[in-house]
Image 1 (cartoon, rainbow, N blue to C red):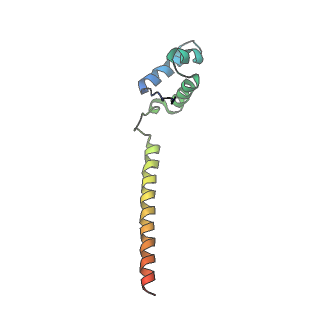
Image 2 (cartoon, one colour):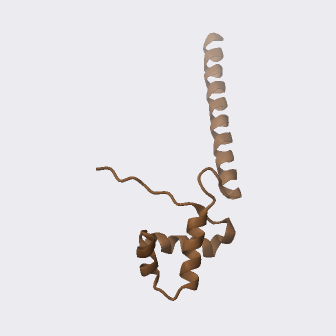
Image 3 (cartoon, rainbow, N blue to C red):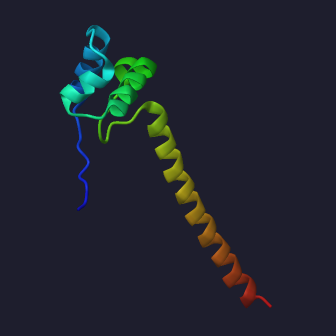
Length: 98
C-alpha cells in the first residue's frame, strides 16, 4: 500500500498555529484533534514564527529567495548548454584545419 500525502491549505495551517498559540491544550492534543502528527504542527508553528505571514506560500508560490535560486539555476543550465555547443564547434573546426 502506498501512502498518499495529504495537503493542507494555508488557511488551515494558519488556523492550526493560531489554535496552538491561543489554546491552553497541549500541542500534541491539538494535533490529535486535527488529525495530524504533532511533529507536523510543531513544524508549522516554527515556520510561522520564522516567516510570519509569508509562511506557507503554497504549491507554485515561492519566496523571493526561492524564485531567485530557481531563476539562477535555469540560467546556469542555459549557460552550460551554450558552453558545450561552443566546445563542440571548436573541436569540429580545429580538426579540419590540420
